[in-house]
Amino acid sequence: MNWKRLALSAAAAVSAAAVSAPASAKMEFYKDYEPGQEVVEMTTVQVDDGQFETYLEGLKTTWIDSNEVAKKLGYIKDYHIYWNTAPTAGTFDLVLEIVYPSVDTWAGSKAQYMKFLDAYGKANIDQGDATVRNLYNKIRHIKGTYVMREVIVH
Image 1: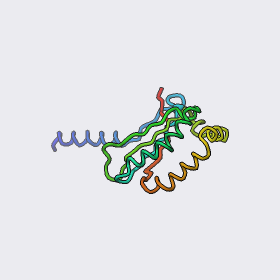
Image 2: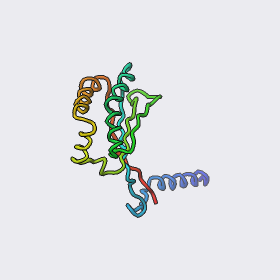
Image 3: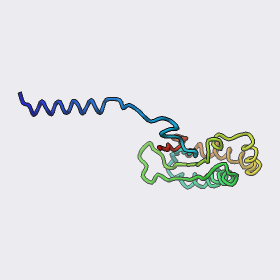
Image 4: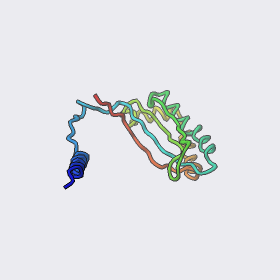
């Protein structure tokens, strides 16, 4: 019998067992880790060929303008548009990100909405809705929306 081959086979079996064995988790929620306060909402968007600038122009008067109002009211901390400069087939061109200071501001309330409505205006909301229906739905495709919180490990 070849002892080297037997030793290598035994070592491989032990390594495979160690990798496939479930880890015994010792992390405890709120003791060892907890969610951060901020909520980050990210929406991935695929824009039809030749419509990138048209979509950005529309975002300037809808998404950006409404986020500026929400930021001034303290409902959001910040917002960003990220451009995927190396997209592959079936992925996305843009990421629209909104950072909320807390779960409560992300969830919203009637009082917050009414204050936003007063500041932004019903006409602007109606115009934005019309832009989504008549333009955005024809030139862009929402690939996904993700709501995330940072994991803080102690």
